[in-house]
Image (tube, rainbow, N blue to C red; front, top):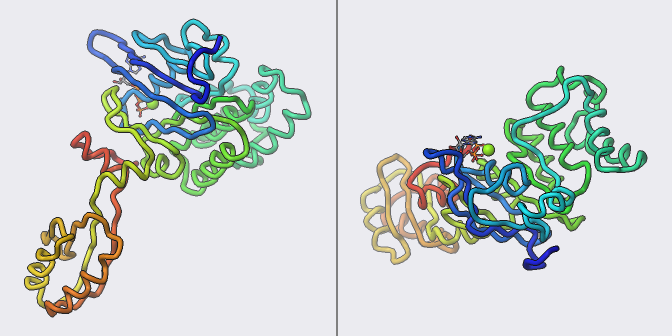
Length: 319
Ligand SMILES: Nc1ncnc2c1ncn2[C@@H]1O[C@H](COP(=O)(O)OP(=O)(O)OP(=O)(O)O)[C@@H](O)[C@H]1O
Ligand SMILES: [Mg+2]
């Protein structure tokens, strides 16, 4: 019987998974995911993303803590949870003897979709993941990327209430990733579906997610909307290239009240400011007063990668 917050599709309380004495993969995770939202777990290899997802999809029992999915408890109501969800795994398990089309059809039958619905959905999804030409080949002839795309199509077959996507675009080319992002956004707009995805691509989290939890060593280090996480970094950087009286320009810059720091280690001068909006003109004025001729100026906002660096002291590699 559903008993938790009705506006939440997923809620976890102190979720822990210990694989062994040495490996504490998930170390007390609390998340609350609103219905019909896209939520991303962003973190590096080994952070505990897949383990979290495996618990929420009832494949793995938590060591401690609890969680509900679609209002059902993942341990005591595992069957009900399974009836509400779709999952796309990071490790791909396809039957090598089936064709791509047959794999999707088989999955649709498992979920009692009628034939007309299956066929319509299969055609739509094969087009989305660009597997129309290969649809009638056995999957053991597919490349890694093709298998991943088919796996994604399979997760989307049944239009579940809650869809779990473990690294949905890992290893795909940019065009393919962009198409899949569009499709995921449309799914959210046009259905009531809630999506939980894991990724180690910060651009993916930024492009798709309503909220992001940055996860490292099994813990959530920071959580919020991508905008909130980036804004609370509080620093934008101007990159200024040019010629002339560089030293005077740097002194002038340091006098400006909004300038937090000036880095001159590279040829391109880096100016840290609280917020870049409206500051360009003042920087250009300072350059003119100093006799420094600006040839190029650009503004860089921090990324989720910078957020990760701030909270963990390490780089979140993007590839
Ligand atoms: N079945 C298992 N038995 C023992 N340890 C495991 C098992 N699965 C994962 N681990 C360990 O648990 C930790 C978290 O792994 P997990 O797969 O959840 O990370 P992840 O964030 O999904 O990483 P990736 O980005 O590489 O997919 C790692 O240290 C991993 O080695
Ligand atoms: Mg993983």
